[in-house]
Length: 407
View 1 (cartoon, one colour):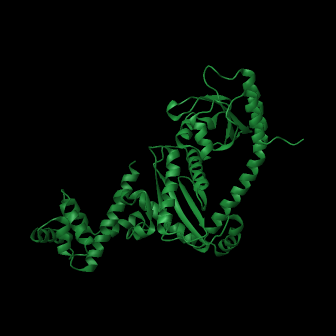
View 2: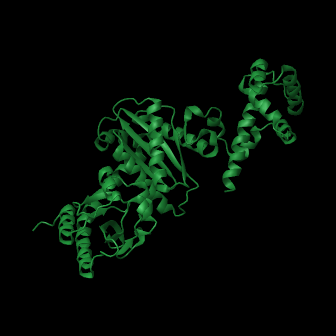
View 3: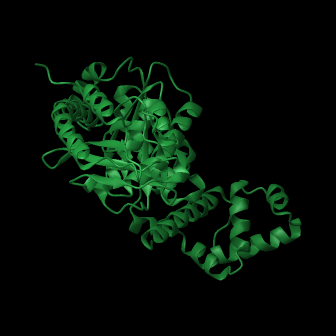
């Protein structure tokens, strides 16, 4: 006799108990849901319609620590979320959490103990069904992660084999690939494993919503995201996808957590993925250090930072001219620094600098004289301007590193 499927088991139990039942994976995405029995709430209806983890409900449920539950318990109601109290039964195979069986179970109308026991027995049957699916899912997931790793490999032969296999793994054409890097900044979640699970959930939500095929690999607080498209996406399309990825993860992390996304210079073919990831990682690093580039930074936005961020910190100190340090240390009001930065941005044009600063030219010449004397460099020379400009950018990176390390 065939073992009933997950949906059939859920429908039978719901009919027996006359309660609305949902089975969700550990990241609160619906695996199956029974018909409504008049007890449904807004949270259940939204989850069924969206087929993804509803961010506020996700955070409410996870705040009860349901991942660690070894036995049946209740998740409290939250009227603001339209969420009624639920009886939650962990569905496990050994110590591994496969899913949760959730039953709306309001105070004053709770299930009787024999009914709870019956639901727990059904959860055991569901575990057998889910374990088969879980093994297959883990196998496919491992194969996909290995393929992505191979596509980014330094070894040419490994990468070429992966390119030939990609069409079998990625659904649809693989002509254009967009690679991006998402990094969580100062995550509120301290456990690395917990953080990676939340990132996985957010990015899987993203993949379900996108028209193109989106894949990802999570490593600590960083995720590499790959979008496979049949056409060449424009820069605006790639940036918009980066923002949606950021929102998908941030919505589950909660309001106190922030992410940044780095984008490569352009979309690539499969063979160009290693370069695309290097560029996107550097762009994400720049965004994590420099607020002006947040939350989504493209490699093309970096300018001189694309070079400076590759330099080890101790060597970056050497990029700053000694005279620039003297100038900044003596400039308590910051007027000379502002004047210098505008003058450099305007390529040494006195009229343009005076206009931007709303300064009379005589006052500007006076400030430039002070700057020249303290720098010991002649800003009329393009080479000297380049040295000072790089020095200012290097100082911005060094100052940002100090801020990050002090958190």
